[in-house]
Image (tube, rainbow, N blue to C red; front, top):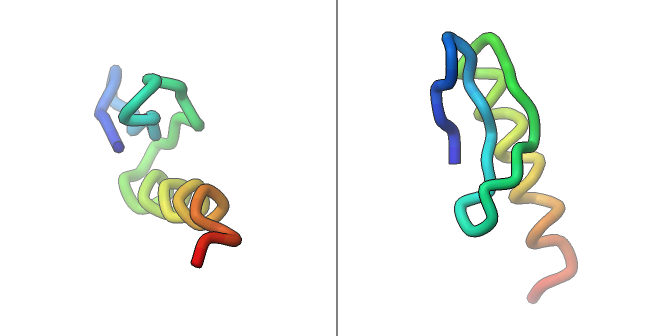
Length: 45
């Protein structure tokens, strides 16, 4: 999930609220979210 916090975009876990980074632009935050989802689902069939 991406949430705007203090003028920046934070990538957060929906379940735990863990933060995966803060980015200045929405595009960079979306890119990081895709990376997190890729590694989370890697190896599943």
